Image (cartoon, rainbow over the protein chains, first blue to last red):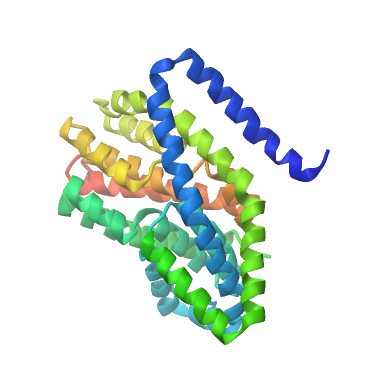
Length: 165
Length: 160
């Protein structure tokens, strides 16, 4: 079978499974529909822009630039840059994977890729403001501090022990 | 979201002025990547919707355990298996705290929710490789566990 068509088989299978589930559980139709709609909007609206930016980034920003600021010589400053890069944007973590890949291909060090992805996942600034509102300043600050410490330590650990060539 | 588009549009314009051929090439790369990854994202989307429907009741039921450590385990497992955007996760976390769920359980839940993604595996693997994906998720789980326990200590929920 054609590889392009093959890719779509699981998608269609999942769609059928959920159709059966929704048929059996009519009260689930509304929440299911809202969730799918929300994520579809995000996908259609955000993803093309992200990938377009990545396409341009991969051509215009030189490898030397990335490896100077995020590479193995970049040290603490590089880690700070990786944290910063991860906290600025909004959007779910799976939007960050193509960016992480591009940075890695351009010479960013492994630890900084882990830092970038972790920061994007759980300490994005727009998301922290929501956390502040619903869980309070104390909870937010504690979690933020612990997260920064743990992510820095374990990213270095992973780089040292898990990525030996 | 509008901001993202303004930034993208400006950059595309600047890039067009700077180097037309490179821009066209860059856009082609972007379109190709989008077509390649689309089925994986759709899979993710349907999975998230199915799982969210089944777990919402479970989250409220199992996180309010008497036993803090069991609560952390339940929170972290549910957090890893589920995915939600922060603007839904935090209000839910707020409700959990109001119902008396321990802070460390909530911390473990929201941290795994955002950092560990069993559902995002197909997409993440595409970019980071299977090994990289498993390591990142495993390490994130450990990070979340330590954060949850540290929160427990700070809130006096765990007595050392």
